[in-house]
Image (cartoon, rainbow, N blue to C red; front, side):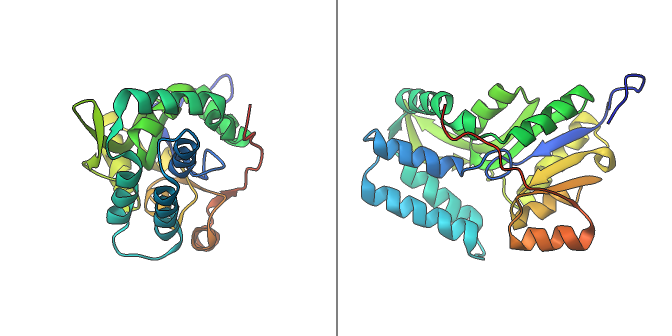
Length: 234
């Protein structure tokens, strides 16, 4: 921690995943369930969505990006942009913001106080990630960009899905653009594929890690956090 007499940590950054790292839930699945409750998605489609995310999260598959895009297509295809944004804003304000771990809020505030850039990198869509950026006052975010056409979300993703090695690409891009010293920087993730991002920084932190990441963290001497305090409702 920086003392009052020390210089701020210029040229350093802290990179954060969102789902199960900053928050206690999976954001896109939670939003799909809210859309079901509000009548914007059918029950059968939600079951398919949840199954897709189970495959994405728990099973070793070669093309995570393809599976992710298929799940997003099920949720967002032909959804009105204005109505979807309004529904998500209401859900974020009433519920999702209260799933942020208290311990992670303290980490964020520590890094802000010490002068580091704050960056979100998530495989979730920009509709979701941008609200976390605004709420937590991050400097930058990387997320899957939803395509819009004729006031509708098409369900398609433009460009990259930031999982696995793509998160590492984003870290390198940000570091190059902002002249960040990665050896002095921090990264936080929970999933086995987050290791590609974590291994780039001098201070990797596995947060509520899955079995594989926990083993990697133990072998490499990485810090491990197990935050538990988050309110699921207002």
